[in-house]
Image 1: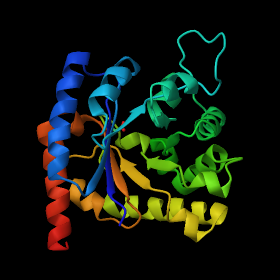
Image 2 (image 1 turned 180 degrees about the horizontal axis):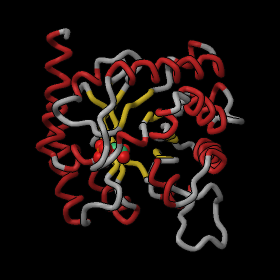
Image 3 (image 1 turned 90 degrees about the vertical axis):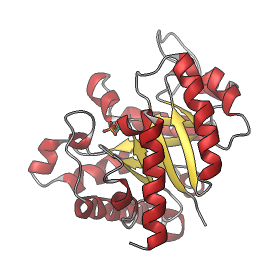
Length: 259
Ligand code: PGA
């Protein structure tokens, strides 16, 4: 059985010393929760020391962004080669903050996705509609468009290596409004449908679809139970390991009790 994915993007948070302590505690925690595939996505400067710390732990480490080219005159960027050289096999692509503040578009998401796959990395492709789209009831169209452009040129064999995170922009961060489970179910079903149209059901069910945006200990168990939710992608609530543990525990309890 596939393990449920639970992971966190740290955004621009945590010093290196905090990161190392976090990793050590998470390794210990991971032994108590073998049913989860855990991953952390720290700032770039922490990747190398954390890769040493997490070696053989089973906890995956990812980068928050990369350029699609192997090298070039792109000050401030890092390349897929630089990541794979230090053993990074997961890269987050197209987070809404990247789209909002750094001009990421569906086209750049596509270029980065193709590049990640070419280099043997798992792209964690973030999609999600804005509040405006939702208010005009075009969320499903927006999601379909984002997926189709992101995966343009990705063949069925490579598609198995992709992870998708559905993160409605209006649900993310301090001002975020947690999404209703029925709404999440509807959008995740739509995502699975697009993937099935692109690659057929057998491959589509292999592609994990994670939910992210204001996931907290209070709502995690309910979100984890939704059809087509294969994992949770967590910001603030997983930066504190007491809360992250509480999420692990509540999701487990809910599953055991069959609710
Ligand atoms: P949040 O962040 O859980 O703090 O809302 C989610 C995200 O940006 O991935």
